[in-house]
Image 1 (tube, rainbow, N blue to C red):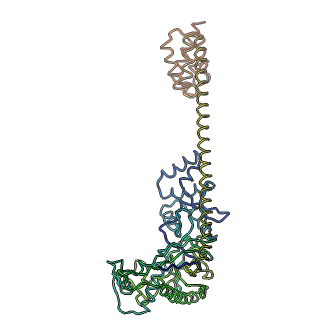
Image 2 (image 1 turned 180 degrees about the vertical axis):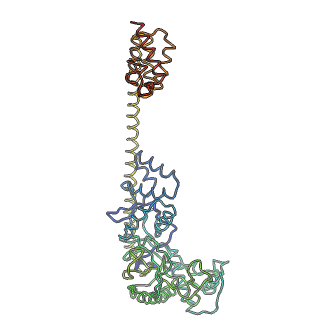
Image 3 (image 1 turned 120 degrees about the horizontal axis):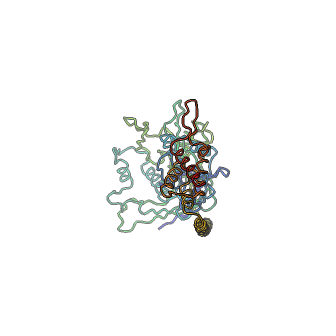
Length: 522
């Protein structure tokens, strides 16, 4: 087995698809630092106080499209509790973020706005969150280069239909899909490539432009992607096994073939694309003499993932029939700082890297750097987790103390209420029965706020006490005077030219009865 130690240097923004996105409700933006913070929702919720947690639950319970936007605003207001991985942002993205937060309560508009605001993540290590270049991506790019080298631009034999790509690969690599053990690339093992030093991840826009200047814009909507910026270096290995005696591989892949294929195919593709970039006034990307060119990840271009001589690239607009195919793409996907760049200056192609061989000593040195970077990242994650644990425990203790204090206050309030009841009962015990009855009804039925309760209790009073004392009568009379001023002086008073009764029948009747009994007592 032959092992190649390699360094992969990033030459243009790369984004490797991994079926992961930064959801709008899974990140907040540090607008001062101009960074996106991706956080763990469970850890975020642990940091919220009781009122904030209740508000969060209430928003989630709505379950509407509009509530997603409300949730984003809530997280923005509580961004001090969001701790996690950070990624650089462009000024245009900040404006886009504010526009999304400022959308009006239109479900259709909100749905479209949030759909267009998802950020495609680049591949990462789930334990350290460090970016990685998956071995499968590199192996796939090498496979495309080898297929092109072996085909050498020939158009014959021609393969058509849905199985054309499979049949072409079987023809060039001399294997059968039903017998994958005969695929020569089963003997090629490519490791994941890991960062061996400083790197920058940013959020950029992918914009679709026509290769030839045109008044019509391309129809591809802009995408938002997390990318690894140029300057980052990754290390990994490619192991090439030799077929054994009983191997079914007919045409094994060699080191020389791989290196020649990358240099020839991706070198030519880089030169072709540079011509297209120059045509639309974009800065070409020169890879000459920097190592072996390789293109990986999203928006590598249709030409870089197909075999020359057998290309059938769909160029018809979406949902337009009949479908139209050509041997070249008519548009380019380029990395931009904003979703609608004012010019093509500063736009960059995606996915370009170059590989350089390393000696075993150089590999060991870079491995140490990679291990140190991983250890630092794991330590940072542990520290962050520990801080969150300490804060969570502090909040738990605080909640226990607050509960104790609440129970203490409740006990104190209950004790005072019981003392007040006992005091009132003792006071009532010294009063005549009729007055005590009135005092209880006054307090229990809130005469101050409820006139009907006062009248009903007064009528009930006279049913229960046929000969009430003067104190009880005076108390009842004062209450009627408070509610109907002047009634105790003249219950039959009138008003207006028609001499209508000033007081209604019930309070008037009660006032007369009180006055009569007071007169009898005297």
